[in-house]
Length: 119
Length: 107
Image (cartoon, rainbow over all chains, first blue to last red; front, side, top):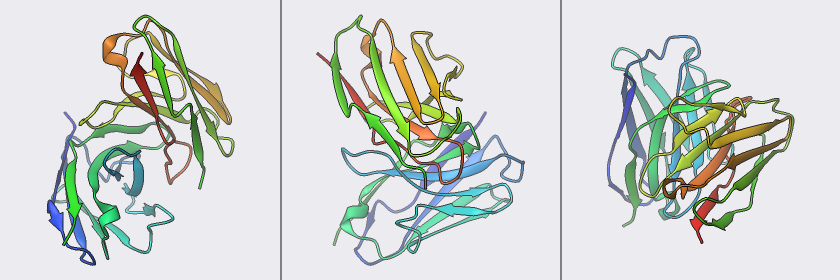
């Protein structure tokens, strides 16, 4: 079955770079139509889509955050890594990774990882 | 990027009621619209895609309709477990943008 799990630091200091890893199983990121995406949710607020990487290795980013984000994949390890530079307390959120398919949506989600940005 | 706008932002209803949530896209997305349900402390759950195709296991009291720029999610005969926040997301193109959510609360 398809599973995804996020991992990374729970606390990050302002101005540092946040690195989150999504480890998945049950599908291959090199299969046509398969993509992995990141979504975050600040406490009490709406879902905020961040980035995705597709089966060809093409990447897409939230327009307002794209200068701070990067996403990469390691297909041998079934992992996708999201980095966010120069974090701010406003980046405090639960970060989710998920499998997303074009014209379908995010059909599988990880449980989320809580990241707090604070000094 | 395609902008998604949901209304209302919150709605109060009672068990057994019928509720409709609206989602508007800033441009034509055909029927490439997905709906999610999120309960507190949990990851969102995909309810339906293609504007009206229910995911396996989703009760038939949930239904979706619409095309192009206007879509609705309707829940009939509300059950206690339906009180949650609902999000639409356009799946026509990347980046896949979300609506701002509709919180369904118990009256």
